Image (tube, rainbow, N blue to C red; front, top):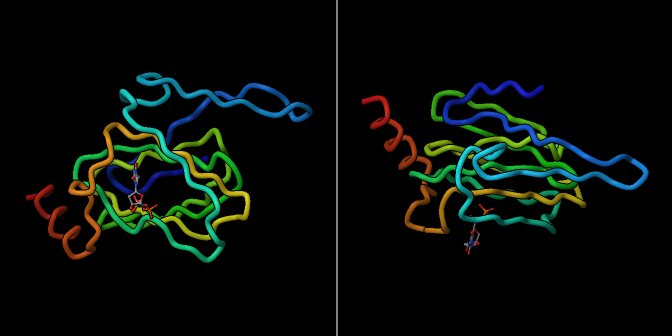
Length: 142
Ligand code: TYD
């Protein structure tokens, strides 16, 4: 059971169907397990074990991240609290809300990361500079 310590996050659980002999199936429906109208789905594979991905926050975007295959480490930082989560259970998604700095690393060879997003890709909505992130979250509490 994952305990979420940072702000603007949470856990989503998918129901699993199938059995070990023939493989598993996980279903995620918009506005049901996924708590928003999905506008974008993307996935990542082929990450070298020593790669680091993410390292940014978003101004407005909410996403849910899954380890659809293999495993990786998800590091979350809300500006005050940090935590790392070992992602290896395909049925367990982590909500990445706005103003949450997220970094992915320690990828297994077979790692496939699946992400559902509540909006289209928009580079201007990223915060890629950590100092700018700290400034942005100050306005949340101001
Ligand atoms: P980025 O979000 O920076 O990936 P990561 O945080 O995992 O390192 O995106 C990497 C590149 O992919 C960037 O040049 C923009 C492009 N991209 C899209 O075109 N559409 C998308 O939906 C996403 C997420 C990225």
